Amino acid sequence: MLTKQESEVVVLVSDGMTNKEIAERMFLHPGTVRNYISSALQKLCMSNRAQLASWATRNKVKSVIIGPISDPDNYQDIGSQLRKMRRIRG
Image 1 (cartoon, rainbow, N blue to C red):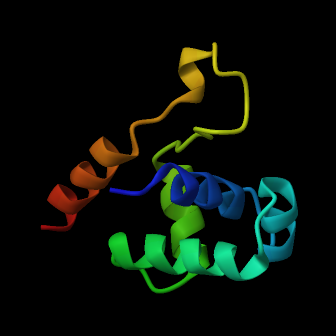
Image 2: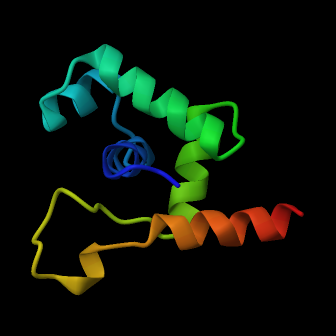
């Protein structure tokens, strides 16, 4: 299961942002962003950020940190999506 930080980075990757842009947006060091991306790739059994962005778009992953907290559509259960993806892959 992806952490909230990893999930947020995945959403921003799928929005086409670079590591530097993500770092600035989330107030993180670019190396930390790189580590979050690497961790998400490993957890999702993927090898590059294009796959990660495609997965996030296909599964309609939404921001869990940035955006109005009062909006229930702003939260996406990453864990259930990951379990569903693993079932599909076999």
